[in-house]
Image (tube, rainbow, N blue to C red; front, side, top):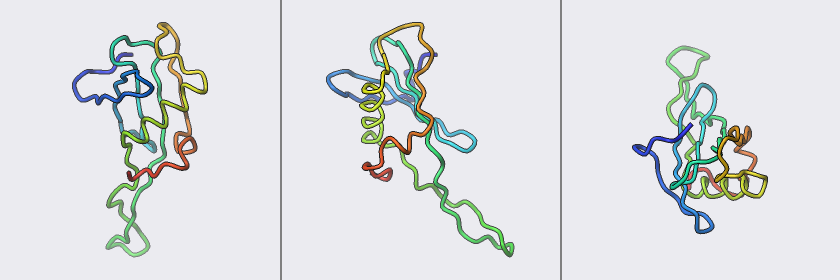
Length: 114
């Protein structure tokens, strides 16, 4: 899988340029990252939704009115750095995606709102 150029963002980490995109999904938010110039192994990181709930007009029910979770460039940088440390090979072709299923746990010192 290669990321579309349209809609993806760029970030430079350790002198390498990457492209990234965030995709909401049922129950989680997915972050996809690859090198900007030569697509190799894809990085996928998954984050749990952090819904903001308020009481609904129905007794005993709530409605979702927003999200606490924001995948900022600072979060993307932390995920890339951690993935590289743990074996992600972004320049190697033909490898299955490098998956991080608990992205929230990788970045405890990074505020998801910044």
